[in-house]
Image (cartoon, rainbow over all chains, first blue to last red; front, top):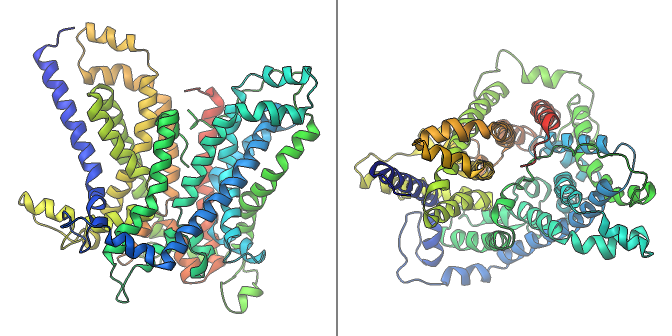
Length: 276
Length: 313
């Protein structure tokens, strides 16, 4: 099809507008491309001279900073294991069993999961953790996130399992497998891609979270990176920019890596729909 | 798309279930316990606590007394309701924040971006999408600090740009904190609307647009007469979801701490301050109850939409 001149100008205008919007979105992040590699970085945008990894060396020499990354990792992995296991079992039951009231359970869970947000329920969550004697422990953060993220994880996975034909398990059972065997040996391998999605989704959510660990944890020993990052401030309350920049970059890497993994594996539109 | 939480339409009853009811119940137990303790129980307990004078420390931390509606009356006290740092101020601020940053900012920008990237060359599409999505997936703490640096009065990138084109620099965090968090939240969340609308546009049969091209329609006409009417359902879904998320967001706290002088204190931040800085758990619980009631209203609307047509996008 031939382009008329106005249509051609229109396409250039569209491209220019899209590029401009992209640039606007990039601007606040631009600083992170330079500051971590600049030993004299300040809040202004400046090309490092010379480029150096000195800031990263300082971060990794700070045992508290490294401990915080490790804490983030423990909390995210702990939450992910709990969510992955519990959501898979529950979603399978919601999809394949004939428990009475399945529809009602689904509806109520959906309702509660959208109503009880972290910022609305911070008081009761604090009180429950406190009453259970779990204050300032990894397990407090893990359990809270598991409970909070499970409903959404269950629905994603239930939709996924619903879309898989029952004939897989049925043939296994015709061949003499028990229902539980059919689940572990036949269904589980088939629904693995769905599990990968909820695992990545919950990892990113827990890894990046601030509010819940901020109210449930007290000691430096247990703080995840999201809260510990606020220790890179001088006594006067001004940020130690070089460390903050390098640390922020390290802390963002797992999220970026998982995003690339998901968009490579599934195309990111899928990932797009599932952030809480 | 998995944004659609609509319960699947009831399947035809089958006599044969793959999983017996007993096994099904066992499979549901771990998730059931976790969700009950950390989602359902807090909902009811927060209502109970909101009728007490429980505090974080001191005598009433251990033996809170029943105070009836005192916490609610304090929140809605007409003498102070609209004052800065009070509940009413915070609630109105949050409403304006949701209107400006979610319903106008995120939704319109997302719609524009989704429409643009349908037609632009793949390279520009990919680069633009990457930055929009980066703004959305990076951890909130990192984003908060990035904006802190970006807006810095003396060295920040924004003022550097403004000065380079001859505009006066400003101390935006101090002078325009509300508009800062509006722009911040629009920037942070536009990706979701963009992706939702993008997948909605992609689901429209290309032949519709080709027919319009043959008829010589402009891009605006195609958008207005084909694109927009066909994704109306997605727009409603998007508006409700981003309203709920923006209403509950705590992220602006990481940029402004709720200040200066309470001018960016959204209800989520107000709730945090009352409960964890002023140590008034009873009053904080009352704020939580009101937030949950507002969430409930939106959730009911959302779920009733899903029930009506259960769209599979």
